[in-house]
Length: 212
Length: 212
Image (tube, rainbow over all chains, first blue to last red; front, side, top):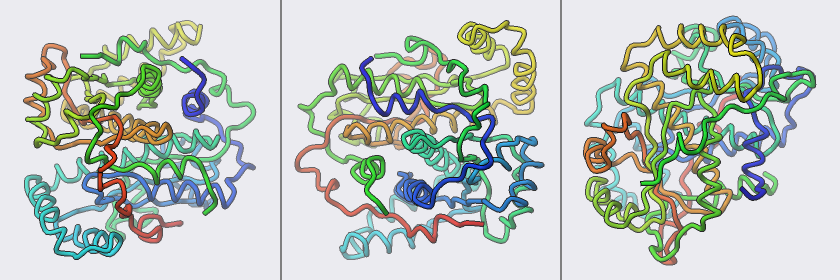
């Protein structure tokens, strides 16, 4: 395997166990991560998500208590909460289709076929299936976010272990029409985080990849 | 927003509509993508996935017929099918825990607490919930895969629109204990792919990101 910057970044990253609470992302780093999130690809391009960012120390401490008490929540620089809308219907796609016509400077009518396809796709799903579909899109954002952080030598710790109901209460997410799907604490590793030195555990290529 | 290589890559990428069928990934590019997939982070590090790669032309053509007839399936260089295991139980984690002890050169007993945590996490989920959890992990791999391709100036087209049952039959996935979750056709854009020149449609930052 030849030397390569993106592979080096993926080898460098790890699920950070201990952040240095004195190290914060620069404004430029925050802008870069936010812009990368905004650019994330999604099903039909619909962007069925919202990304919340918590930096307030007391809010982070409240969230830590309902995140299996993982210290990364309060010691990270920026705690990202990747959310999906509570519901999504074909009508919600209209804003996207309007924007697409405007952005690409084409008549809105040229998206009629696309609109119908989206309607058919959504129409075949009940609320639970739509929720599952939206949550998968949010995980694309998570995967891209971790890769971008690694490329920028920014540390991250993805987190599924949190109480979504409590998060919703603390952050008033029901009123915003949002459901938290997964979190990612972002910042810089503490010098004494032993996890950084641990060998990454991955199965052999032969086990996880097969050429047919 | 300052110039930045990873943002440039994310702006360069798009869901490729038309691949140049004469352009194939080099062995080095395939090895890089495979290794990046292998390095993908996952819940508890369990790597509940398998990545299948199809290059055989007649197999790609059969798959295209059950992929809404999207031509990318047969014209791409490598068609990736990201799968999850049909089932996953705490016993399946043993292979990972054994590997972790071996890789990190620590006694297997030191993972007893971790093993218990994994058992508790899986024990709280029924088969459907475990499937949903595994599928989310696969989408982390998809997100990372698309980012890595972009960073390497390799084109990709993610695909949810395929008949999983037909894929399973064509590729004999039931016998392998696998369920296809999502696909990604990889290769190089055709010179006349009009989609490459279209402006990317993304909501404004204010709509998709909120600082709390």
